[in-house]
Image 1 (cartoon, rainbow, N blue to C red):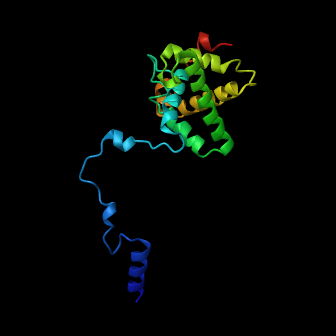
Image 2 (image 1 turned 30 degrees about the horizontal axis):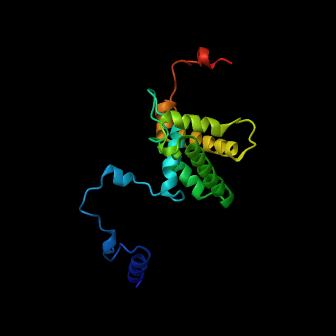
Image 3 (image 1 turned 30 degrees about the vertical axis):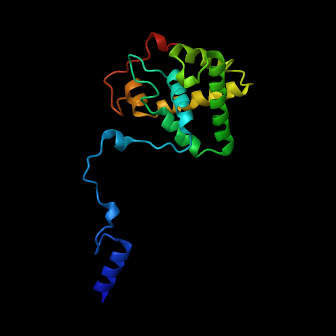
Length: 185
């Protein structure tokens, strides 16, 4: 009786024991590509906002000879995840900020920010940032929010940590290399 009771509890608690898994859990015979396996589904931002967001983060942290930029580090995905769980006031700030920067690009160059050239994007973002320390206008407030999110997203990604910062892990160094001339205050 104990064996039957144990078997019935195991079959209900763990459906794999004592029965076949449902057909939808069977693997597809088709191989999964790396892109399909890594495909991200945006949680908050609309498709028309994504080009702007990716271009903005890449303008803040561009690719260079040392390491890839924000786009390859998938910073827009990080920001999307953070904004999706944020309060409505923060979501509204992102929505308004993206509209403001696209309007500024449209007024200056006749096209949305994501379609501007790299130099045009830098010009628009520089004007948009204004006096970072002032934080008086909605544009400046959004720029600070954007910059902080881009930096957080980049330096918590594998690219930011391992390629840009060249973090080696928790290893003992035979000697302390120091900061060098540039690191002195």
